[in-house]
Image 1 (cartoon, rainbow, N blue to C red):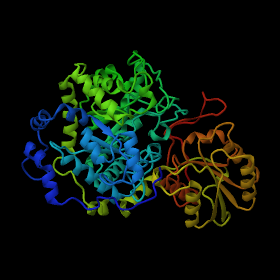
Image 2: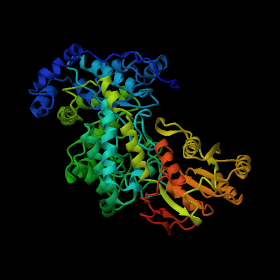
Image 3: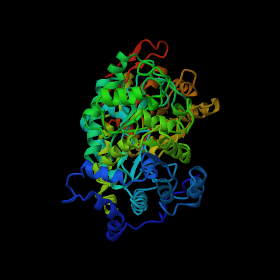
Image 4: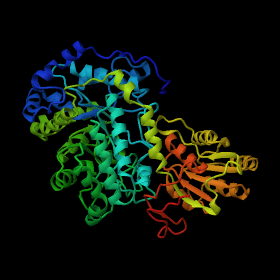
Length: 610
């Protein structure tokens, strides 16, 4: 399916005050929360009373967080209705809530939930209305993956910030806190109250295919400080932050989406390397923690993934680290959690391990009925369900969902993608760009000496609903800074013919900027850079994902690390190239030599300036 753009949401009007009062009457009466809107959250006795009145089926539903296709809760496009019928057996989000009473819904761009901010707010309101109008209806905890950088579900015109490794290069806790506060305020304005961010994994494996630049870096102390700061920012904005992926996904060369990784760290190494950011998140009052679908034999030698491990989730996370907040699984559709047990066993085993929220099972009906059957047959007790439901309801109460489940369009206009927020993102990005090589002081690039610039290189699909492609964004930014810049996309695997075309174009330019994306020893990208350098034109390489590219590009006279190909980071790189900003980022990960990975080429903290 293809999202053709914005349009009518099918439930565009914000619910009236009368509708809100009618829909929430049962909940507010049960809670009897006295006082003004900012009064303390209802106490546990009132939440327990809500739980006591729920049917077993409602309790089971409250544990699930599910995807659903469509831009509207009641009137999605026909293609999205068809996708919902095929995957979930319902037509709409409203029908999903009526049939399964799910406690949470997760938004994805590919599910067409996040076209633009006003539509997102309407969708959130439609979901809340559909749930609250049900018998004993409860507000829904709406979540998404808004990490920023290369993983974000809400794109322009919302504010998009540098990703975690870029923030790690900036090294500023106040920037991380501001990112969380601003991004959280925008999510909340659109009705999203739980963000699956920040990534608390310490990325010590350059070959990590799934974390990489989503991590703040390789130093557990630095990562811990930035995780705690971002948590504080998000939660000050009234959005639940989620530290992920416990007990740590930073040292694997297997993607848990497609395989079953094993972390070989000793218990001692885990305590020193992987645990500190999660301890810091807990100390910062983190609202939720997401599990990892990987095996850590030093913590549990059963062969089970951490998501299904009682020794890890209850023994370590709950009892050892003292965490009593919400534990949410990573997506149950990922191969890492499905490889050992069937889809009917996974949710039951996750609950037995200590999980509270079951995220995005591939077959909701199968998973929902499996939990229901496990309770009826005595494998799970109803008390066990009640414990998790109470945690989820406490979080919903803390986030104000019982008092104020709806959002207004005025709040969207006042908050999302404002000029002040966009300027803050640019300022933060400007402190992250890292200069690694600058032979002969090529940079900053003189507009008088090199007025005509060719921008070539990789053009991966634009992340996070940003403008893209990267070569076009870089060329546009350099053009605004006074250069005559043209873009030529050469892709992530340029052929000999493509390289020849780029070389010919380079001969007509005064200087060349080449965007690189995860360069390997035998890649066409490396050959491209070498042949561009051979033209005699000055070449500036900009690593637009992993900073490790510099080790494969010894011939390039200037190398920068941008850590992502989102607009905000590419604009920052352009300003650094042009000398409008000084490079201030420092490597948050070490870069090893390409010919001898045991040797460090550039250590953590390395970075040149002007």
